[in-house]
Image (tube, rainbow, N blue to C red; front, side, top):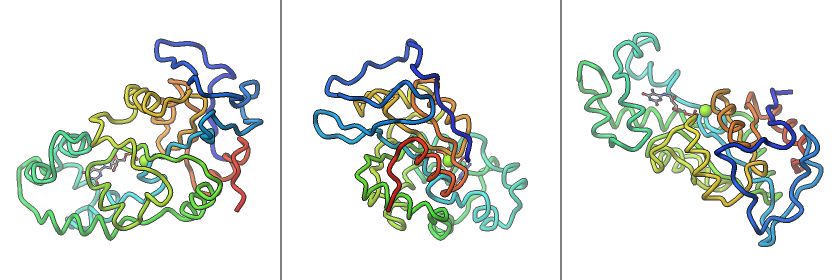
Length: 243
Ligand SMILES: Nc1c(NC[C@H](O)[C@H](O)[C@H](O)COP(=O)(O)O)[nH]c(=O)[nH]c1=O
Ligand SMILES: [Mg+2]
């Protein structure tokens, strides 16, 4: 089983605590650290828990680690040595656009074929094995799902190719919010937007530090390893993953 991270049964109040949304009734059992004994709905028939998904290397393969070095004819080590240290992060936060990214992608300001890089990224995007099938089941079983991703406007290229919106909304994207995981404010803003108690959200991410940040604000955190262990973890928590 993939590592399952959960706050103590009842999350201790912190300055970040949010109040239970007033329309919530019969909330999930809080007396078991590892299993929700009931799936609940709110007064407006909202099914709980809400599922929040990291995208890169949780739902979609990140082309950065193989396709991009190959595109530049470099090893990853060589690429990291000559890349600008913050340009990509700025692009992810939406503070620069892709033209500016291209201008400062390399520390020495050398130019490159931006359209070629974008096509390379597009070719590289694919669902991680077994994930789309799991999303399909969760969608069929009426779970509310949202993307929660550090990624630039190129989310649109992912959407164009994989139509992730069939399964979840592109609600929480760093390029729109200007915040990146593991910034606690990114998670707190999401809870405020969703008007939901953090214990009624499950967050799934391949990076442990992002999972830990979710847990720190009271969200249930699952560390993604692969689709099968995620299915098992969700099932153990009482989520209906039957097809
Ligand atoms: N530095 C560049 C990256 N890096 C990969 C990113 O870390 C990744 O795409 C993203 O931040 C994933 O975040 P999450 O934790 O999965 O939400 N990728 C590029 O394509 N180009 C870069 O220059
Ligand atoms: Mg990721």
